[in-house]
Length: 238
Ligand code: ADP
Ligand code: MG
Image 1: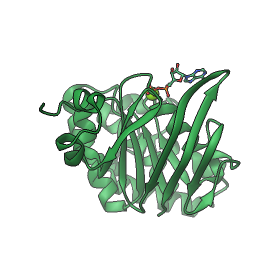
Image 2: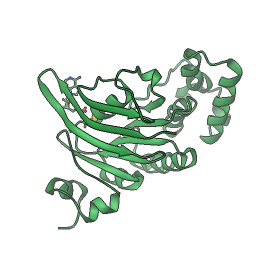
Image 3: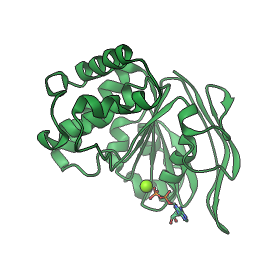
Image 4: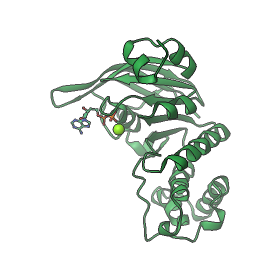
């Protein structure tokens, strides 16, 4: 797996700076949640780690190496999005295998990895189905499977559950946590949902308008909010 370091990360769109210098050292195997209200810069921060946005200041390191100039495919990461568009005309197997095929992974190894991920995700009996023949939870698991088969050192999640209904969201939240524990993959997980953040995080970054107001374990943040914003957002007692 890998450590991730954010060193003075900034992002400017045009003339507007939206991320104002974020520092964080993420340990190997940690589950980090980036939480904050809509528009505070969570997705932008994650996308810079992924290589989907350029970094306009500071440095992103994965496994101790600077990756600012590396393409997403060269960063040893896998990302699960909110709109995890599965290919509707492809089977579950082919949906999970797609990224590996593109990367030129040998067929036997693709089959091995997909079957292994499917077993982990309880999708073994569904590999021949099309996405429309699956439940919402199963579709979400296929999206997870696509990330797992790549065997990345880091998982990046951007509000992966926000399209699901409340009950399923709670169930999938538990599944993601168990899976992460089992695989031990360093994870950065973006959500605007405080409860989701408190449940999932080893440590959380509470973001407020492009800054990290506080970084800490959920109970620590809850008990000792660093700013009034954090207290209000997390719902700490006065
Ligand atoms: P969040 O994910 O927390 O809702 P975002 O990272 O999407 O927030 O956005 C942070 C800020 O950056 C917002 O003010 C948003 O309007 C702005 N922003 C995001 N992407 C772009 C872009 N491609 N061009 C210009 N501004 C952007
Ligand atoms: Mg976002």
